[in-house]
Length: 119
Image (tube, rainbow, N blue to C red; front, side, top):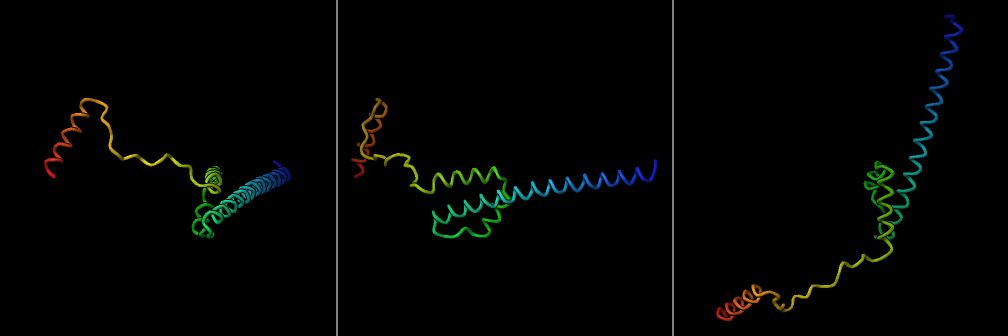
């Protein structure tokens, strides 16, 4: 092998390494920008909902999260931030209940009789 060949090979490998480093840097930069944008939107939503700024410790934790997880948290926050939570039902009626089976009727009658004797 000639020294000229080795120099060309070395130059080629150096160029490929520089290209890979640049592509990786661009990818990491784009991910950081996307993550920062999501954190900013989440911070704005948090501030609108609570009236307080997002704590820096929370921002640091969010910055370490996966982008998909941030998207999910942002979706949930935006869905619930602008409206009151949906009611899960009305209050329970705790009034006197009519028995539906013979066993319930017998138990109800016995309980009423015992409470009458005790009182």
